[in-house]
Length: 261
Image (cartoon, rainbow, N blue to C red; front, side, top):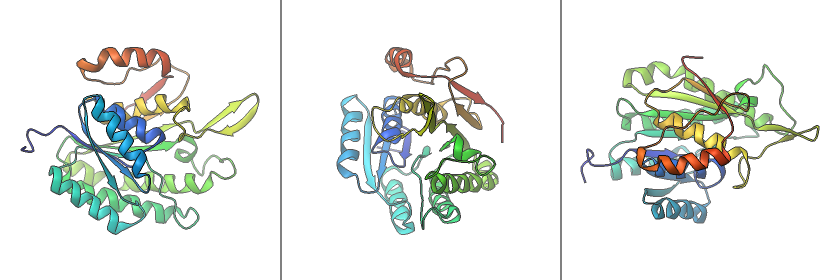
């Protein structure tokens, strides 16, 4: 099969569970061949791949610890060998190293992006997934226990901003999707985990991430919240009916701000 005959190729880091798995499923339904990255969840990654394939899509699982530069390089080389290009890179997994040293996590993220860029043709998308707590860190405080993740995510986001010139030269667009990891329930503040499959935050977040990856008019930043009208994710006509019911039942509001940041 020539590169012209291939569907879009999408790599989702941490794609074997939670938010990453839901994003992988949605991108599979949009027609992309989804590469489900995982570190040590081979069975769960295989399950996500099987779900995508049962729904008529295409997917593969690839193992790589994002903190291991050699493993990341090997994964990107495998994508190059098998597909010849990469159209969508979803940076979902957190890279927290050495107790959350942000600069170390940012270096790992930069290595992944720099390794992937040569495979990304003009019009490709990079989507960085973060939380509002990390996005505004350290200007706003975070809950105890979340600081290592916030520090690392904030450093990764800053690194992506510094790479904009390289993205522009290649015609690659980068979108940051930021949403609530913190919720208030019965007056108590809790960290909302985006890992369990049943978590109500996952569908909302996943729709925004998938939309950022495939929308014909991408935004620079998307905030996922609860205060505005629901914005419909971009989908192909053949799966539009399925998304209608899914949206009505599961999605909370999404606000997109173009050309911000």
